[in-house]
Length: 257
Length: 155
Image (cartoon, rainbow over all chains, first blue to last red; front, side, top):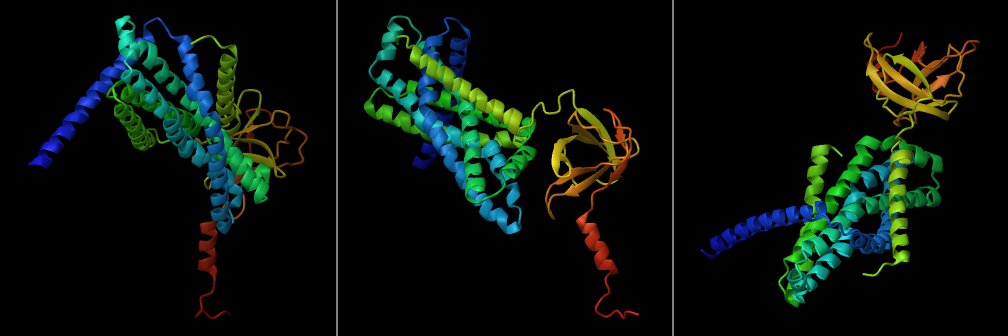
């Protein structure tokens, strides 16, 4: 009996959450389209979410590229196809690992921070203070953060991919002694602008929307206690990571990226 | 938050770096706008392309001089490939285009063998001498059929 009750409750909560998220999204869109535009806050968020994530993105990109180079070389050399290492590293990074890993890293680095920041504002009644001054907190606090996340993710993903390609080059050409021209030629002939690069950017953009909305939504609806802030941060990371991976499948299946 | 020119500058640098990465991926890796106008465009018909793909390289003596812009079925039901080449090339009219394979199982590419004619090909011309791809499976099939079996008596 209890189990059935719990199941019904879980389903209802999911539907309620989905509805609240939709209303929240429409609210953010309206705050974006209607002036005043918070350009200064937007730039500040670009700094916090983008520039401060730069080091982790570049280091991880380089490391992933180097691992791909090593694994790819060891596998390909058995079939005497080591010269197509560039294609393996390039396609893997551009199609999948670049956008997905960037989004996961950004969730951990920037998404959790965003949720915690907004959650703390809720807990310390700063958002209520804004409402008392008849300032819409979604316009002033939420929208710049969500938009900055959407704008930042394709840029970070592209930087991740470039760092990864450099890492693969480093291992393949520098360590394993492949021909550098061969690496680049196989990379260039395998990766297509329309099929691969545009799809990669589209994925990054969709992931940016997901992270931006989920992180700000979870923070905005956090319970006004320290436990509530920590729960909001945790659920941001969990929900965003899972939905990134699920959406990745559907984008890949629908657009054939 | 107060205005901070240094922070704005860093944000600008970050956006520039991101856009530069996107541009590098699009233009250099993705091959966008390589086949712009001004190049030498030639056509070649093949009986069998054997998996030649668009953007495959076109080489002379192993040096890349252009790429395949596209392949479609021509009016004579032969594969008609469009070659986008370096505009500076002066190719004789009896140039041969042959589809070759990089390594035993590698990617297909088109190699151009220059002839000895005085006249040169202009943009939009057709390369009349072509050599189709060699299909490895077909060669093996021929070999198997022609090979004497263990019970065959050779005369």
